[in-house]
Length: 124
Image 1: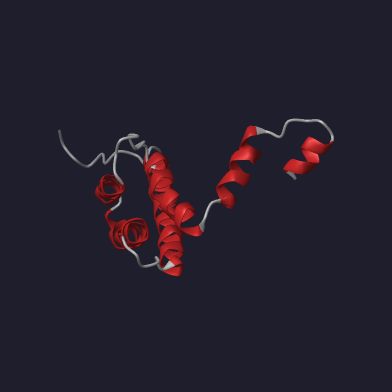
Image 2: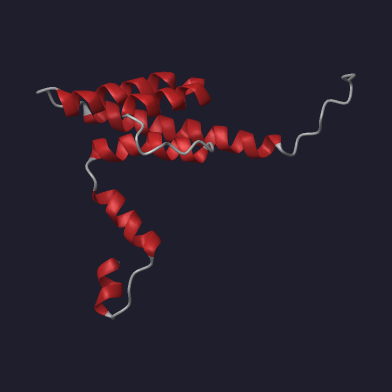
């Protein structure tokens, strides 16, 4: 698709270039990016100096149900980066999918909570 735009002399839209770049990344990198995307989705943009462990801890504090997949993904990421053994890409990919799902649920819950009526039976 990008080549089609370039072939007719049009610069492809930025979102399309980002999408193509993202999908060309290795599986483990794409899976790890879900931690960053999940943090942004729930309103907690990670600082550039945050380590993978710090980002994972931040995500777990915000979405406690993401503890298992986030910990699995961090372990696979660290295995790949710091050990001579390969990461289990299937585990990493499944953990990334689960983090994405849980972060969308958290995002939706946050949006819907704005429309809930306050509890009027409670006295101040």
